[in-house]
Length: 267
Image (cartoon, rainbow, N blue to C red; front, side, top):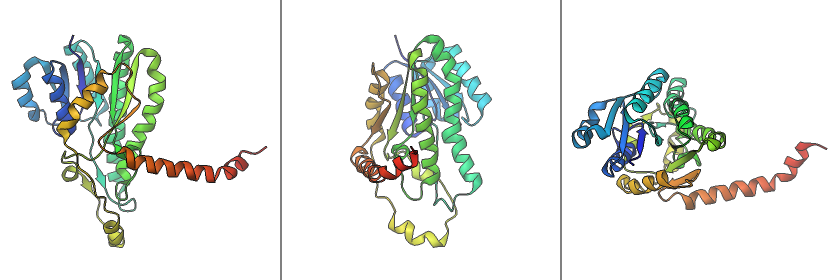
């Protein structure tokens, strides 16, 4: 039997790569995008195997409707990929309230709305996988990405709880944490108005990213989706070495301050 997918943010980038990967192997995909005209080439090539759905994930009623349409058409949902999102760039002091709320509405609340909408379906089936596309930036942080990191760390924490809550229903949940890829992330990102005081900081802390090939993630994503026991966390790309150093430093600091922590516990 083919696998049925519900994937958000499929017009470009990693979401598009994974949609095409699923369709190429004969699976069926409910593919959501703000502009479904971007999905017309897939419809022409794969016909009824792809269901294009216009969706803004910040619109909760629309999310519920999209999931209902997908289930009506596909019959079930095997893999749900919460991929829709964008980056809000700027130092923490530079990010406006509107920019921060918009970032959280899409990256965090959009993920929550899709997750809540599909869970009744997956519970009734007694099976299913939810792949939450966070980021390397969901477990580490760079200067100038604070709003983006906040949204992705929030998804990571939510998913840690979710995985424990739904395991008894046969539902597996994974935080998929891609590093930097050539997806057009930077050009599509929103940038806050810069404060001159941060000019030197911005120059000194500009990250030097190694950029991966999005096409190379196809097989990896399919392996995660197909795994009998999928991981709770998995990187895509070369993130592990840097993150290991960060977490080693956190452990060192926690141990150094453990006497203070124990003192704070009381008798």
